[in-house]
Length: 113
Image (cartoon, rainbow, N blue to C red; front, side, top):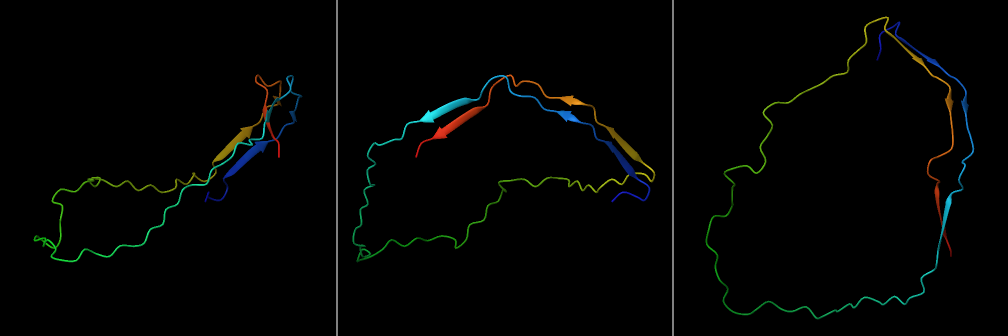
């Protein structure tokens, strides 16, 4: 929030618009009538677990990495908003802007149902 007395002046001027010198491109797409095949879905009966002895895995119950994969940054930078000095003004002058002909025409795509 700016201190009391801070102001910004904006001057508004007219802007003229022109007409494009080149008509836009038009692309007409032909509808696709090729057959689309259904995906093959295979459903099987669930199997039961194997019967008999299983291999026993012996080892620690948890695993701890000794070296971290990502290092933490050594510093943290905290920034706060900068408040303008009381009485600061920012004048903005807008000049007249003329609109001419586009260098490249616009593209238009027409989809057929």
